[in-house]
Length: 616
Ligand SMILES: CCCCCCCC/C=C\CCCCCCCCCC(=O)SCCNC(=O)CCNC(=O)[C@H](O)C(C)(C)COP(=O)(O)OP(=O)(O)OC[C@H]1O[C@@H](n2cnc3c(N)ncnc32)[C@H](O)[C@@H]1OP(=O)(O)O
Ligand SMILES: Cc1cc2nc3c(=O)[nH]c(=O)nc-3n(C[C@H](O)[C@H](O)[C@H](O)COP(=O)(O)OP(=O)(O)OC[C@H]3O[C@@H](n4cnc5c(N)ncnc54)[C@H](O)[C@@H]3O)c2cc1C
Image (cartoon, rainbow, N blue to C red; front, side):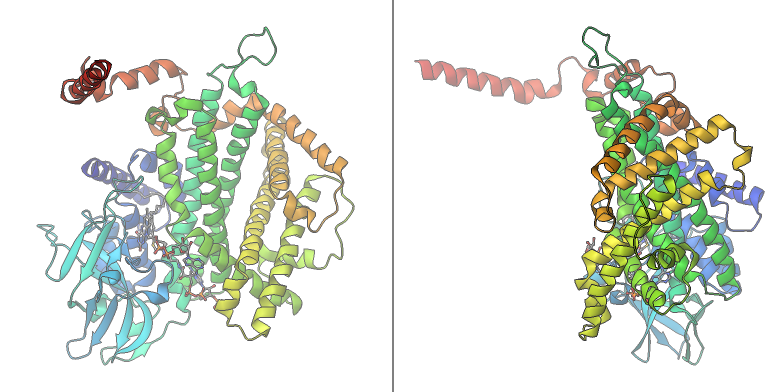
């Protein structure tokens, strides 16, 4: 599996390189184009062992290294002459970066760093491709000068000989073992013992160690987190893709499969005619669209911020960090939930490997963990919301993506309920701001009672998480609303297409409303009649979108090879493909399985003999 994945990954990397040369020679960002070609990521069902090389190793060299270091290492990495990974997480630490144990001690006598993973828990553990594929890595370690800790730093470390691929002296490297998915990625472990690298192997665009050992601090320490921000942006797009693939499969299957008459005496309908089936499938189609649009927005913001950071303008980093966290969390949580819901919507056949829904789930699910575990990133956003609420109380302006918080904070009560889209969107935003206000009261009370900020964050964690989740909902729904209702290219859309988009907006807003009804009712008075009216609208808009479900998922444009699913094949020959897949199973090569003579027959015979004896 690993060698097949490497073979496919090399083909994908070649394609990526040609895309880069075509789209912006020597430039960096072709990822939107790349992501437009889901083949690159979906055709390697066991995961891409070069993902981290492409997404993190090459970018860290470009963004964290000096121009000279890029010339020495980055160009070769971009050209895939060397293959690297991003080795930050350790066996003992992943979230708490200040707790990382790997260390880099500067030796001014030789102008080298001595790298060590002092304990088993210090071993790097998880980096993609580290086990077998990579010959280099970005090694993240605590920097020490004269045994004084200076914070985290990144080092270019060669771990295998470029000719023989043998691990170099002082390097202990290997595969961490089988996972619930992505088993073609060879996530690895790495131990270093007194491993020396030249001073210029420390990435020094933002912080430097001079030959005499003097340390020049980064103007903004968080810029070293930038490689993670990029992948969070990619995860938002990638997981919306996974959800779109699953939605395509489940939709196509739901218009092929017939089951259970709706009216007595009527023929069995397509299962998508059942309202409850529509409620399982159609909202996931819309969620995939909603997150694809939000991820595209985020990608643009990343590109703008990356250019600003290159000009040493770090002002947009906090907003990008907050949005990258919230979208990475929301997309990975909702896509994972949605893919499982779509699998269940396909009955028993959804559980077959031939349906590929299990593998899509296994590809999507780890995104809730890597690149910042979701609950931790929610707390990150919760902290940022506390800082921004202090700004609101001080009458200061907020970052654009949080402007609604200022607006809602000025409302003494929620306006008359109308049930319009604006009303539904404002209700979600108003509930979010109410949650932020309550969280701030708890958090601030703790800080005022002399609790540390870290402790106050922990003990207010449930309210901070709620506020962060509602902020994510507000941002995503607000972005979708703007794209559908106020987009500058709205007039270029046909009325029919605009109507479909508006139906998707109606469904998304009502679905989020019902998902957070409890949170909303905490701050807004809504009558039973008003809620029942929304229930009717929900049923109505599902019915309206039913005829468009196949067309919308066809528009995702995943071909059969990418979907790799007997349930989602374009020609609809589901049963033939399921049967074809079944006959290919190794157990069907023989009429009588080997285990019959070896195990089953003796077992049954022994039982029969015992039964006879007991009768005597
Ligand atoms: C061949 C072609 C194939 C290529 C194409 C494939 C396409 C596929 C696309 C996508 C699929 C993705 C595949 C990816 C594979 C898997 C990759 C996984 C890689 C990893 O997992 S790398 C390791 C990731 N690890 C983490 O994320 C660690 C998480 N922990 C943290 O981020 C931090 O520890 C913390 C944020 C939780 C805590 O930080 P800490 O320093 O302890 O303290 P704080 O007070 O919280 O923060 C201090 C200060 O900094 C601000 N801040 C924190 N983080 C950031 C940031 N990232 N950016 C900017 N600012 C940040 C924070 O807000 C605080 O600010 P303040 O002081 O309050 O103002
Ligand atoms: C498929 C996959 C690929 C990966 N690829 C890479 C890679 O290429 N490079 C790399 O460096 N890493 C990689 N990782 C590692 C990944 O980044 C870490 O798993 C992730 O950062 C979480 O760290 P951890 O696993 O050590 O969990 P921990 O940090 O130990 O957290 C465990 C649990 O503790 C709780 N928790 C932790 N901190 C807090 C807190 N502050 N507040 C409240 N609760 C908390 C959360 O519930 C969390 O889930 C990968 C992981 C996976 C699964």
